[in-house]
Length: 202
Image (tube, rainbow, N blue to C red; front, top):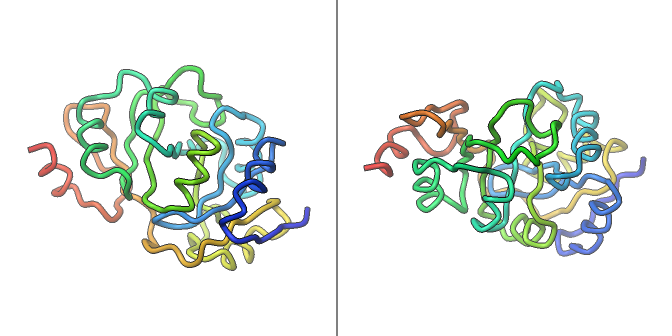
């Protein structure tokens, strides 16, 4: 497979790749992500293959607008809605009950991880393509890439398209918080600390 690198403005090319079952790497506010439409199970499976990612690891969903949340999640806890109002778009991923219509490749559990990234190129793609299953655009276990070139060095020949939006501003993956219990539980440390989350809950 030939891996193309195009400026991030080439939205139509990315949409064409996604519509034909391909996967696309693109910049977010944290690191470069590798994504497929959230309801395209074969395309999501190809993310696992491209990354050598263990199949038991769920893939988060990125959305472009809060109105898309109900497409991928259900019975969203009040805690998650308060976090969304305070931190989205931004580097916070919330684990919440998933819509049963999501394909099994997204998550084998009753939950799904969701966020809205704070990056113009990512938002433009997500608003055009709809919710996407997205994980960092790297070989599983390797360094998360912050430039298109770093994506290319790891995934050349494994994916059809990389959208180049320059260096990502964040550089580290988002904070992952479980919102399904009585209190927030940090599953992966990131830019937003537990103290900040608790403060947001008042």
